[in-house]
Amino acid sequence: MRNYDKASISLKKIVCISVILIFILGIGVMAGNVKVNSVKIVLSSGYEMNVLTTKTSVKEILEENHIILLDDEKATPSTNEEISDNKTIIISNEAEIVSTLAEEEKSSDVTAQDVLQNYSKIVEKIVTEQVKIPYQTVKKDVSTGSGTKQDRVVQNGVDGIKEITYKVKYQNGNEIEKKEISSRVIKKPVDKIVEVRTKQVTSRSADIRTASKTNNPAETASTALAKKVKGITPKVKTFNTSAYCSCISCCGKSNGITSSGTKASEWYTLAAGKSYPIGTVIYIPYFKDKPNGGWFVVQDRGGAISSNKIDIYMNTHSKALQFGRHSLTCYVYEF
Ligand SMILES: [Zn+2]
Image (cartoon, rainbow, N blue to C red; front, side):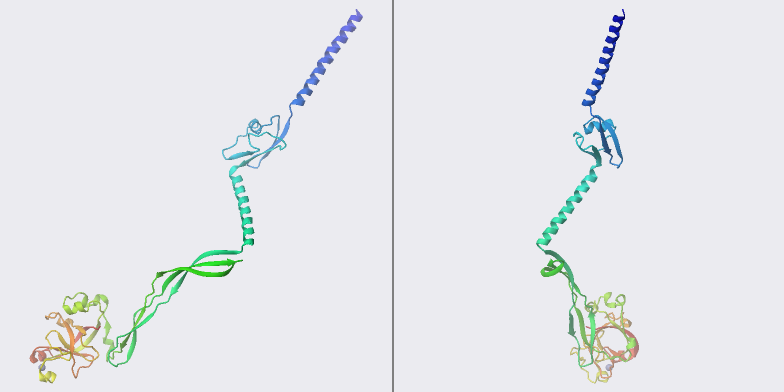
């Protein structure tokens, strides 16, 4: 009985040992087949995490750690790769990668350019410049007689602008050649016009003033003379005005022929001093209701006529006498 017991105890021992051995062996086999890896994951925010995993696919490792890639995010190595030697997964923003790549490309471009510049140092550039076209001064002699001459600017000069296009060559930053290839006038210059006139001697210059444009009777009057002087700015002057006829008493002759050679006519002919050329048109508002509307032409000269005295031609001596003397405002149109 003791022997049987002994034998049964040793059998139990064998079974126990065998079970333990098989168990230990099993773990050993399992440990050999399933490798646990420590992987470092760097998130796009820069946060780093270390995880233990039995997976080897990047996609599975990320899923296991509940990491979802956003549309613009990317894993390195990519999700379809297996983790091999590199035990780090980097999640980055694609935009950043692109910009980094672009910068790398740029910097490599610059180096290429540097190389090129070192090889061929001449650079060509198209340059446009604006230059001034100085105005010309034109002198016109409109003087009459032998009086003192005087310059008068009738039009101010204005410089023009020209645009010139050049082809410029540079070597090491220095201009070595400049060639004009085209030019065009952007603004034409305006000539300065100077008229040489006979200086007018007037005893009472304060009486002379230039009518303003709004105060030019020629702009509104409709007589033939007014139309003739339209556009000319008159001088406004007060004349000591009297009248005359074609009698011997008034003219020393009686044929009625004026200094201009034509026959004097009432409400047209006017006699003035030498400073007013034959043909000068004079408007006298005092006579605005007469047939000529107040418009006269200097056609005659008189011995006693000074520069501030004029004479109106009238048909009869009595009419001239009746008129007497008046200080009248006159608009003088010279051309
Ligand atoms: Zn008379």
